[in-house]
Image (cartoon, helix red, strand yellow):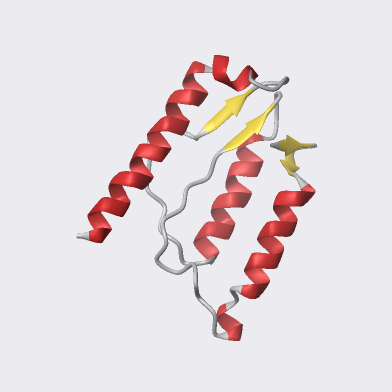
Length: 108
């Protein structure tokens, strides 16, 4: 989720800790070549910031990101509200399908 135009402290901590652990400077590249996608959820604003922060981390870890036609973002305030965001649900579904298809292609 987006809090004050940025990712939550919990998400940032996960990125910081896993990025530190998986540092190529330390000879660890466990995420390299793995498939990943980014999506964000917000009440109103900060979607693009969170999405971009996630993608920057994913790319810095040498992960592979499939492309989709739009951002995978959903808007909602209360639990379950995002289910009413048809475009958000569609783009999130599209991202999941793209990740699965890419995984199948790379498996071949």
